[in-house]
Length: 423
Image: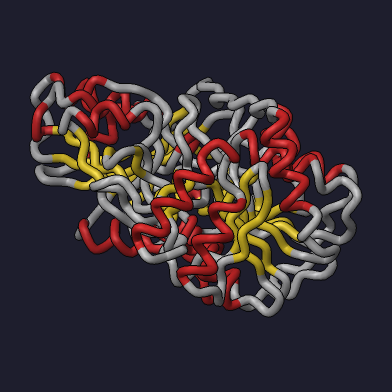
């Protein structure tokens, strides 16, 4: 392996108007981005765009400190970038997660990918570790500069590249950010049981991170022969694999392997991932492709939303018309499950907001974006039950949704439905 570069050597690879591709979450190379920001502060960059989903480290350039010399282009807002988007110092590209690679490639002619990675193995191959996402698809199609850290687990799948493919690399002792599992409430646990009891043995599941997904996974302990094909690998997946509930023997695709495109969780998860041949990370344009997902029988998609209207439209990325996140992979998996033989798509939410307002609404708020459309939605779940919407009329949908709304809101919702001609 050639000797390491300095992090600021990346600047020689970024020209005026250049595009920098950064993996999401812990795939972000912190020392390299420090060097890029330092170059911007010194006036060494001009018109550079950084493309990334879900940043987890706040930085001055996100607040527009360097103006158009260094600007962030987001494809999903995080707790870090949300405030900067609201202040118009970050751009947001609406996108299905499955299509982010093609969108990034289409916006840049000669991008440089900067990513955190594991040390090379004895064959000279580095792993992108916890993030394959859209970056894995750039292997062999773009220039790479890696930040290698001993803390990055070496994972398998389609997320590896040889040292001969690198423009350069540097070394750091950066640790990975840990995200502790959210402890489910009683409401989360109730929703978890309602979903889990409808998942058959041998199904392949997709779920995210958060209290309700954690509750669902905790409710699957008595299931058998489940498979995993999901964008996010979390600590809950570790529990199911170690207990033997997930073994993938009934899967049609990647049989016996748990498949994801990125991982986010605790040190326990990172240690579980390291050199674990039972789990593979693949590019998101494969993992989230609805056409791929549809080939897996009995596929179960589970996603959270923020509000659902009488038509069944799910607003999962905006709150009262203001952007909160973005589409992510929700619609990818909802469509894939719809076409899967025996597939099911669950959309889960609490019946009310923290202030007591109903999340089941007659119409979405002005400006709210529809993430899962009415023609795709299948089952909506609150702590009061499951509304099966697929194939139902608007009148039937409305009645089913009111039945799972909080009891104190049902009379008003019924009256509003009558006014709209839906009751």
